[in-house]
Length: 506
Image (cartoon, rainbow, N blue to C red; front, side, top):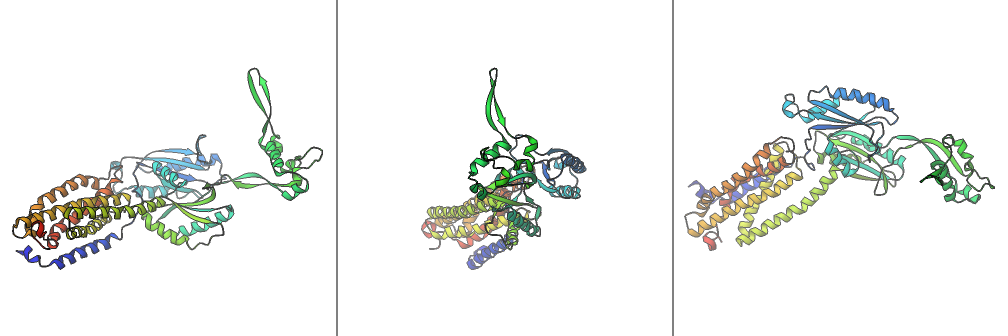
């Protein structure tokens, strides 16, 4: 019999298994990586940041034009606009910030060949003529998740931490120039607050010391003069009202008048101009802080490329930018979550594999069947990743969980096969390597078919919300389609049963 003659070719069978594993592994290496697949929320969330000096009426005019441009796409059903921020919002957005909620029609009504990426590209092309406007394309829930992760609206965020805002901004500009040359980087922008006119009062401590004045007393006088303080109370029937004391508005806005403000006892007559420098100039509308440290952020999204390779190349690009003393670079955003999740999986995957091997050894009581079944596990995992790459998916946390679940199904098939071979050897029914797989063929195919029939619909689905379950299902389906036929053919060549449990090899 042909199979009987192949029993003498164990080394060839082992070499074939090794070649298949290596071949699939080399193909699987080319897959990209991401944290989680992007959800399809049925629309776009577009933010537009205009120059900080723009007037509200001008922003409204541009927003109307942008909304009309978006509605030119036949797939767009409605566009909701939002300028600035509501009074109870936690985001410090000004009138130069506009948000667009772009609702899309069901995919069945889209033009032939249209996709989310192609529609996004069309929207970018329609809005490309606006000078000085920084655009960010995302989705409502995804955008809020990104903001919760890093505090910045962006898929990947590079924060420059320090105390010197000028040095931090200079470094961030240099980083942005380097990141602009990295393929896959989109919506690249320097995330910073705009400038507003500010009144600056810088106290001269030496002058205060010469005049015998305390810094706290002078600061208290300035705080009351500019910000007001309750000096007394008045009663109006049963109501009590506080009476605030502060300088008139025309004096508070006039540096020359503030220099004449007396900050000592009246008899000494020391004015604020004698102990402080007063000036008007632009200042930051807001200063971003994290972990009690100032930061300036550069944010970007990833388009047309996987997250892992893009960030890796971006890290290499920004590594050549020199930083001033006291500045620190911190990567944040979705990439940080991906890195943390993959590190945890790097610990949980070997732990799951060790548990499987331990259970197999306890079941068989011998090392040989345990190692033979374990030899097919890398083939299954590489087959799963190769299937993901062939389907156009990226390797994510969902895919990794699917690979771990796949191991259990492959081990089950291996245990059924080895157990059937042991029983055939115990009953001395001819060649155990032939009779055992013949008896185990139906159980193995049934258990595999049940898993495939349950997961194939999820693997083929492209409906809204299927993005997270599809990689999980594809990993298991493709791994089973690769590992099950190979195991049915090669495992009997490598394992002939236990003589103590029913004949076979020592």
